Image (cartoon, rainbow, N blue to C red; front, side, top):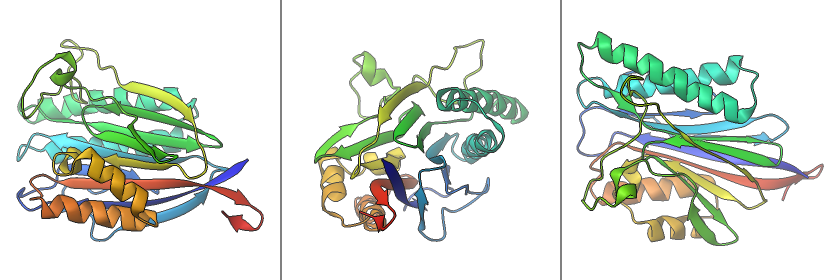
Length: 258
Protein backbone atom coordinates (compact mmCIF):
# COMPACT_ATOMS: atom_id res chain seq x y z
CA UNK A 1 0.00 0.00 0.00
CA UNK A 2 1.21 3.52 -0.83
CA UNK A 3 0.67 6.48 1.48
CA UNK A 4 0.91 10.24 1.41
CA UNK A 5 1.71 12.43 4.40
CA UNK A 6 0.33 15.91 4.99
CA UNK A 7 1.98 18.20 7.52
CA UNK A 8 1.74 21.65 9.08
CA UNK A 9 4.14 23.52 11.36
CA UNK A 10 4.07 26.69 13.46
CA UNK A 11 6.62 28.23 15.82
CA UNK A 12 5.78 31.17 18.13
CA UNK A 13 7.98 33.09 20.55
CA UNK A 14 5.16 33.10 23.14
CA UNK A 15 4.04 35.95 25.37
CA UNK A 16 6.83 36.08 27.96
CA UNK A 17 10.22 35.16 26.47
CA UNK A 18 12.33 37.83 24.77
CA UNK A 19 14.00 35.37 22.39
CA UNK A 20 12.98 32.17 20.62
CA UNK A 21 15.05 29.11 21.55
CA UNK A 22 12.94 26.64 19.57
CA UNK A 23 13.78 25.39 16.10
CA UNK A 24 12.41 22.74 13.75
CA UNK A 25 13.01 20.71 10.60
CA UNK A 26 10.01 20.80 8.28
CA UNK A 27 9.92 20.25 4.52
CA UNK A 28 13.73 20.86 4.39
CA UNK A 29 13.31 24.17 6.24
CA UNK A 30 14.88 25.29 9.52
CA UNK A 31 14.91 28.64 11.32
CA UNK A 32 18.04 30.85 11.42
CA UNK A 33 20.08 30.88 14.65
CA UNK A 34 18.47 34.14 15.80
CA UNK A 35 14.75 34.42 15.13
CA UNK A 36 11.39 35.37 16.59
CA UNK A 37 9.61 32.22 15.45
CA UNK A 38 8.13 31.38 12.06
CA UNK A 39 6.46 34.28 10.25
CA UNK A 40 3.61 32.05 9.06
CA UNK A 41 2.37 28.49 9.24
CA UNK A 42 4.19 26.05 6.97
CA UNK A 43 2.47 23.17 5.21
CA UNK A 44 3.38 20.31 2.88
CA UNK A 45 2.07 17.15 1.22
CA UNK A 46 4.26 14.34 -0.07
CA UNK A 47 3.93 10.86 -1.48
CA UNK A 48 5.87 8.42 0.70
CA UNK A 49 7.85 6.98 -2.18
CA UNK A 50 10.62 9.14 -0.70
CA UNK A 51 11.45 9.70 2.99
CA UNK A 52 9.98 12.65 4.84
CA UNK A 53 11.20 13.98 8.17
CA UNK A 54 9.78 16.30 10.83
CA UNK A 55 11.54 17.47 14.00
CA UNK A 56 11.32 19.90 16.92
CA UNK A 57 14.27 21.22 18.92
CA UNK A 58 13.97 23.21 22.17
CA UNK A 59 17.17 25.04 23.10
CA UNK A 60 18.34 25.65 26.65
CA UNK A 61 20.49 28.50 27.85
CA UNK A 62 18.11 31.45 27.99
CA UNK A 63 19.79 34.67 26.89
CA UNK A 64 23.08 32.73 26.87
CA UNK A 65 22.56 31.37 23.37
CA UNK A 66 20.20 28.45 23.86
CA UNK A 67 18.81 29.26 20.42
CA UNK A 68 22.22 28.42 18.96
CA UNK A 69 22.02 24.88 20.37
CA UNK A 70 18.61 24.32 18.76
CA UNK A 71 19.90 25.73 15.47
CA UNK A 72 22.96 23.46 15.56
CA UNK A 73 20.71 20.44 16.15
CA UNK A 74 18.34 21.40 13.31
CA UNK A 75 21.19 22.13 10.89
CA UNK A 76 22.94 18.86 11.76
CA UNK A 77 19.78 16.86 11.05
CA UNK A 78 19.35 18.67 7.71
CA UNK A 79 22.93 17.78 6.76
CA UNK A 80 22.52 14.13 7.74
CA UNK A 81 19.30 13.83 5.76
CA UNK A 82 21.04 15.29 2.74
CA UNK A 83 24.38 13.50 2.92
CA UNK A 84 23.98 10.26 4.91
CA UNK A 85 22.90 7.02 3.24
CA UNK A 86 22.62 5.02 6.48
CA UNK A 87 19.53 3.15 7.66
CA UNK A 88 16.99 5.42 9.42
CA UNK A 89 17.87 4.38 12.99
CA UNK A 90 21.58 4.86 12.30
CA UNK A 91 20.96 8.22 10.62
CA UNK A 92 18.93 9.51 13.57
CA UNK A 93 21.46 8.27 16.11
CA UNK A 94 24.32 9.83 14.15
CA UNK A 95 22.46 13.14 13.92
CA UNK A 96 22.08 13.25 17.71
CA UNK A 97 25.69 12.27 18.37
CA UNK A 98 27.13 14.80 15.91
CA UNK A 99 24.82 17.56 17.18
CA UNK A 100 25.82 16.74 20.76
CA UNK A 101 29.50 17.10 19.92
CA UNK A 102 28.95 20.37 18.04
CA UNK A 103 26.87 21.87 20.86
CA UNK A 104 29.58 20.94 23.37
CA UNK A 105 32.14 22.75 21.20
CA UNK A 106 29.86 25.79 21.05
CA UNK A 107 29.45 25.69 24.86
CA UNK A 108 33.22 25.86 25.23
CA UNK A 109 33.34 28.79 22.80
CA UNK A 110 30.74 30.59 24.94
CA UNK A 111 33.22 30.72 27.81
CA UNK A 112 31.86 27.68 29.59
CA UNK A 113 28.20 28.75 29.62
CA UNK A 114 26.26 25.53 29.19
CA UNK A 115 23.84 25.35 26.30
CA UNK A 116 21.77 22.43 25.11
CA UNK A 117 18.75 21.30 23.16
CA UNK A 118 16.08 18.66 23.18
CA UNK A 119 15.23 16.75 19.99
CA UNK A 120 12.05 15.00 18.84
CA UNK A 121 12.26 13.55 15.33
CA UNK A 122 9.94 11.56 13.04
CA UNK A 123 11.29 9.87 9.90
CA UNK A 124 8.68 8.31 7.63
CA UNK A 125 9.24 6.15 4.53
CA UNK A 126 7.07 3.60 2.78
CA UNK A 127 4.84 2.03 5.42
CA UNK A 128 7.23 2.49 8.36
CA UNK A 129 8.05 5.27 10.77
CA UNK A 130 11.09 5.78 12.98
CA UNK A 131 11.07 8.13 15.93
CA UNK A 132 13.91 9.48 18.01
CA UNK A 133 13.88 11.80 20.99
CA UNK A 134 16.09 13.11 23.73
CA UNK A 135 14.86 15.46 26.44
CA UNK A 136 11.22 16.38 27.02
CA UNK A 137 9.98 17.54 23.61
CA UNK A 138 7.25 15.05 22.80
CA UNK A 139 5.78 12.92 20.03
CA UNK A 140 2.15 11.80 20.24
CA UNK A 141 0.02 9.61 18.00
CA UNK A 142 -3.72 9.45 17.44
CA UNK A 143 -4.72 6.12 15.89
CA UNK A 144 -8.24 4.68 15.79
CA UNK A 145 -9.27 7.37 18.32
CA UNK A 146 -6.57 6.19 20.77
CA UNK A 147 -4.15 8.93 21.85
CA UNK A 148 -0.71 7.87 23.13
CA UNK A 149 2.68 9.42 23.77
CA UNK A 150 5.24 7.68 21.55
CA UNK A 151 8.36 9.50 22.78
CA UNK A 152 10.00 8.97 26.16
CA UNK A 153 10.59 11.90 28.51
CA UNK A 154 14.16 12.11 29.79
CA UNK A 155 13.48 13.76 33.16
CA UNK A 156 13.96 12.89 36.80
CA UNK A 157 10.20 12.24 37.02
CA UNK A 158 11.06 8.87 35.50
CA UNK A 159 12.94 8.10 38.71
CA UNK A 160 10.15 9.16 41.04
CA UNK A 161 10.96 12.85 41.48
CA UNK A 162 7.83 14.86 42.28
CA UNK A 163 8.05 18.55 41.46
CA UNK A 164 6.34 21.07 39.26
CA UNK A 165 9.25 21.35 36.80
CA UNK A 166 11.11 18.02 36.41
CA UNK A 167 14.80 18.30 35.52
CA UNK A 168 16.15 16.89 32.28
CA UNK A 169 18.37 13.84 32.62
CA UNK A 170 19.28 13.71 28.91
CA UNK A 171 19.66 16.37 26.23
CA UNK A 172 21.97 17.37 23.41
CA UNK A 173 24.99 19.22 24.76
CA UNK A 174 26.24 16.78 27.40
CA UNK A 175 30.03 16.45 27.45
CA UNK A 176 31.18 12.84 26.82
CA UNK A 177 33.22 12.73 30.04
CA UNK A 178 30.05 13.49 32.03
CA UNK A 179 27.60 11.05 30.44
CA UNK A 180 26.97 9.27 27.15
CA UNK A 181 23.73 10.44 25.57
CA UNK A 182 21.11 7.76 24.97
CA UNK A 183 18.40 8.96 22.59
CA UNK A 184 15.18 6.95 22.64
CA UNK A 185 14.61 5.13 19.32
CA UNK A 186 11.57 3.22 18.10
CA UNK A 187 10.15 1.88 14.83
CA UNK A 188 6.51 1.26 14.03
CA UNK A 189 4.19 0.60 11.12
CA UNK A 190 2.02 3.43 9.88
CA UNK A 191 -1.67 3.23 9.10
CA UNK A 192 -4.03 5.43 7.09
CA UNK A 193 -5.58 8.00 9.37
CA UNK A 194 -2.67 8.20 11.81
CA UNK A 195 -2.06 11.69 13.15
CA UNK A 196 1.25 12.54 14.81
CA UNK A 197 2.06 15.58 16.91
CA UNK A 198 5.61 16.76 17.62
CA UNK A 199 5.93 19.68 20.03
CA UNK A 200 8.08 21.55 22.49
CA UNK A 201 7.06 21.89 26.15
CA UNK A 202 5.73 25.35 25.37
CA UNK A 203 2.61 23.44 24.32
CA UNK A 204 2.53 20.58 26.83
CA UNK A 205 3.20 22.84 29.85
CA UNK A 206 0.20 24.99 28.87
CA UNK A 207 -2.30 22.46 27.47
CA UNK A 208 -3.22 19.14 29.12
CA UNK A 209 -2.92 15.87 27.22
CA UNK A 210 -6.67 15.25 27.16
CA UNK A 211 -7.27 18.62 25.54
CA UNK A 212 -4.50 18.00 23.01
CA UNK A 213 -6.11 14.66 22.19
CA UNK A 214 -9.51 16.29 21.71
CA UNK A 215 -8.02 18.79 19.29
CA UNK A 216 -6.37 16.05 17.22
CA UNK A 217 -9.66 14.15 17.11
CA UNK A 218 -11.94 17.04 16.20
CA UNK A 219 -9.95 19.23 13.80
CA UNK A 220 -10.67 18.44 10.17
CA UNK A 221 -7.12 18.97 8.85
CA UNK A 222 -3.54 19.31 10.06
CA UNK A 223 -3.45 23.08 9.55
CA UNK A 224 -6.46 23.56 11.80
CA UNK A 225 -4.90 21.22 14.39
CA UNK A 226 -1.75 23.33 14.53
CA UNK A 227 -3.70 26.58 14.63
CA UNK A 228 -5.99 25.36 17.42
CA UNK A 229 -3.15 23.99 19.58
CA UNK A 230 -1.10 27.17 19.17
CA UNK A 231 -4.06 29.38 20.10
CA UNK A 232 -4.77 27.30 23.20
CA UNK A 233 -1.15 27.51 24.41
CA UNK A 234 -1.12 31.29 23.92
CA UNK A 235 -4.50 31.75 25.60
CA UNK A 236 -3.20 29.87 28.67
CA UNK A 237 -0.32 32.33 29.02
CA UNK A 238 2.29 31.36 26.42
CA UNK A 239 5.00 31.31 29.06
CA UNK A 240 7.53 29.59 26.79
CA UNK A 241 8.34 29.37 23.09
CA UNK A 242 5.87 27.09 21.32
CA UNK A 243 6.55 24.81 18.36
CA UNK A 244 3.87 22.52 16.97
CA UNK A 245 4.10 20.07 14.05
CA UNK A 246 1.14 17.88 13.08
CA UNK A 247 1.24 15.32 10.27
CA UNK A 248 -1.36 12.88 8.98
CA UNK A 249 -0.92 9.68 7.00
CA UNK A 250 -3.38 9.06 4.16
CA UNK A 251 -3.90 6.20 1.75
CA UNK A 252 -3.04 6.93 -1.89
CA UNK A 253 -4.06 5.41 -5.18
CA UNK A 254 -3.90 6.61 -8.77
CA UNK A 255 -7.11 8.49 -8.26
CA UNK A 256 -5.62 10.56 -5.43
CA UNK A 257 -5.73 10.48 -1.63
CA UNK A 258 -8.42 8.86 0.45
